[in-house]
Amino acid sequence: MKISVIGHLAKDVFHFARDEPGDERRVESFGGVYYSVATLAHLCSKDDKIYPVFGVAEDQYDGIVECLDRLGNIETKGLFKVKEPVNVVHFFRAPSGARTECSKGISAPIPFSRIKPFLDVDGVLINMASGFDITLETLDLIRMQTREQGTLIHFDFHSLTLGIDDQQKRFRRPLTDWRRWCFMVNSIQLSDEEAATLTAERYDEPTLINQLMPLMVSALLITRGEKGVTLVRQEHKKLFRDDLPGVAVDEPTDTTGCGDVFGAAFLCEYLRTKDYLKAAAFANGAAAVKSSFVGADKLELLKSQLTPESPAG
Image (cartoon, rainbow, N blue to C red; front, side, top):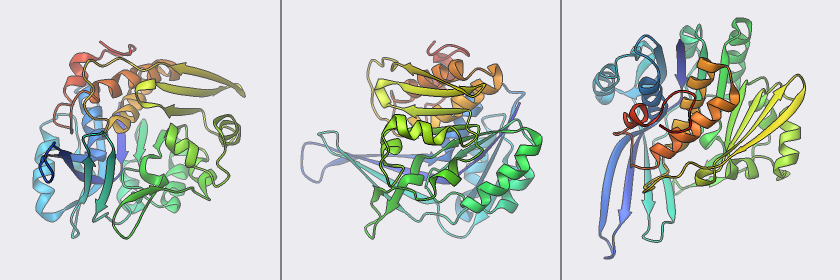
């Protein structure tokens, strides 16, 4: 099995406020598309190959290549050096649990010329980790090339529905061209918040589903955090809906990266089973495991706590 992963790398900085004003705990970790790549590395076999395609700041290039090489089944030829620093995402969490996200130094979109050599694969995971990872024109080119090969595309909207203000804070905004982004993509992933704010018309979910699924989409996944996930699949021009409950976690710690893990686990399991429902259940369990720790340093837990075709191990 061969899978390409497209999206921006990030450095995540978590700020956890303590009781005293000005006192905080900081945790730093690779973020963005790194969650997707590392998840696939741990869930796929050592005989499978993962091809990440993203830019890395020159002074960080050797370090990220060494980090990925240690995972064993990552091919790093798709990484390329860029002069600008990697996107740094700051997450500020108050004692109440409220979270603010700020992004600094978002990289330029990944050009199609960097992506094209890595499209002869079984599946392509596009993770709009920054929201500016690729342009719509690049997505069109990916679709045209992969369509002839029968390559599956899983598209995670992620930050595509986020704008950025002059203070680097992210905010929800509708997409006027959302239909073009969805067209002819095998599976699409949205959080419930992303789905609610995707369209300028603010379609409710039933209306959005009826508008989106005819765009040659086979599966739509609406993730709901601890409440689980809704899978809408299209088979023989009929729609089927499955609402999967959340997987209980003893001590949920942080939800950052859960969507990235979900998307990677979903594509991996679907390529193994060709069953959308099994893949959604497996991804639901993977996201629950991720919520039990901060950052990306413990993603190896996915392999020990999950088994294929089951929501949790």
